[in-house]
Length: 298
Ligand SMILES: [Zn+2]
Image 1 (cartoon, rainbow, N blue to C red):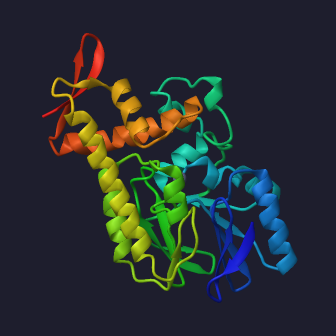
Image 2 (cartoon, rainbow, N blue to C red; image 1 turned 180 degrees about the vertical axis):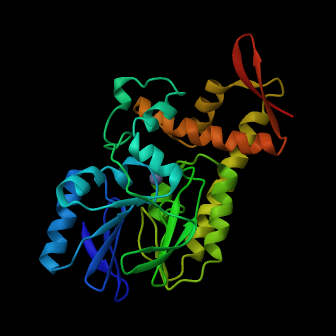
Image 3 (spheres, rainbow, N blue to C red; image 1 turned 90 degrees about the horizontal axis):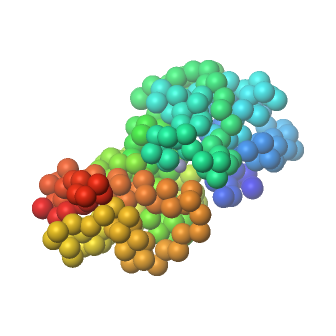
């Protein structure tokens, strides 16, 4: 983890996951908290070493790698937390992530790990889309849903903290099928990013760039390809295929070898999101045949 400076007021701790940091009038604002207590300790050590303050924390979305450290941040340093309403509900009831991954049922113990279930913590304030004021900070919250149901991007002093609305090129390659909950909203949010005027932006996973347009376009192209290749898998069988069959073929097509249940369920959510988008476009339909969930081309 290292602290990078972008402008007089805007910084970020970079590493596996970005933690944004802004300073103004002797106050410090964090954007996300990292995965766990250890991430918070490292970050705090760096701030103390630089003599930089810490007063508030905004959480961009309720994924464990972005808010898992927030409970420690709040209990140890008394830092108030802020999030959009929907994400706040999950942060405060963090078992909801393994629950939704597990079809809404109580999750198996395999799923109850720090990567899928951050430490639940009460959020002190709700953010609004548009202008927000926290202490001396005046910033814009941009609605960037798709990767999560109500993800927030923050525009502070001309720097866009974009959360996981787009991924850096290396991360995109590594994930192969990025996590999304809604393919259409993901693409709309990516399109929105192309029209935000800023001095530069940093994603939740990836590096700072002054001009993000090419990286964002790479994200758009990847989702379009993933959706088209999924439709190809569906179209090879006019009578339809089971959901599990589609999952297997699709993961094989992209040379993915899943190693654990959690990872498979994350992929399942993305595949479901693509299928839902294709269903909205009337390119396929969901039906039950012989007690199996079948997806069939239209
Ligand atoms: Zn995320």
